[in-house]
Length: 340
Ligand SMILES: [Zn+2]
Image 1: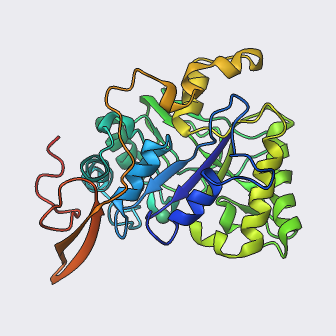
Image 2 (image 1 turned 90 degrees about the horizontal axis):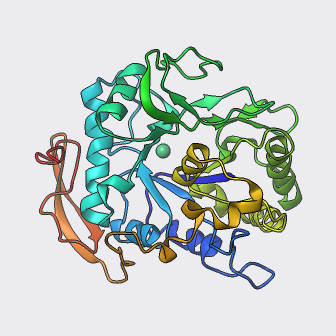
Image 3 (image 1 turned 90 degrees about the vertical axis):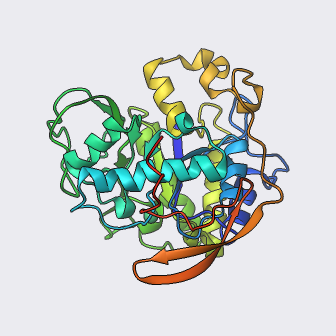
């Protein structure tokens, strides 16, 4: 399982990249598909500011997972549980209202700057009925860690790289940790693919990703995290090496790019490779008829001119959504945001 994730705002700046990876043909003239024939999919951890919710709706309609990366994107080490709630329950509600995603499909969070908030954050996840967090950097990578539950008091099976880590038990909650990569020689380890040292050419990009992937693929097959910010791909050889890696591992026949929710479904119901092409949670969403309400792509969004009160400044913003325009730019202090 490869867990490809993108953080921060989704908008005109990065949407063409997502089109190229997920919709356009690879060099071999085929769409990038998993061995079961379904298109490869990713998770978008969406932060609010500068996000075009029409485009988020389109990503969701195409079967990607959408999760919360907070409203204001601030460091949360001093947040109270209520602050965490405003950021992530609030962002889930914004995603629901303006990208038309059912609340119950927004199941995960990633803390801004991967700055986790210990028990205050995890209490919010529990109270807010989230299923998982995916913010914790895990240094130990040989063999790599699998995602784990917080059913029992968190006794730190791995080092806490960024404190505070949670100390209590949170039954039912999962941590999909970011198992660190081995950087280029002399570079230590890195959590995000774009936080490793920049390889000099396409071949070196490809080798960096492949060598890290193999540590998972050739040992215990813990899901391999590929966590990125879109800006990294503006360097052409970064994108070329990345796409070459994807196209090559898809030839292996037993490698799937799945969402975090799909990875957890497999862990709850481990299924042998011999039967994996019929594993229901990994089927293409378009083919699952149980979906209660089909969300359509947003082709012609409303372009809303809205008031934005940030601290003492009153300005305006353009805000795109296929849903009804708000009058004010949604923000951390929007009055009715946490009522559902
Ligand atoms: Zn971020």
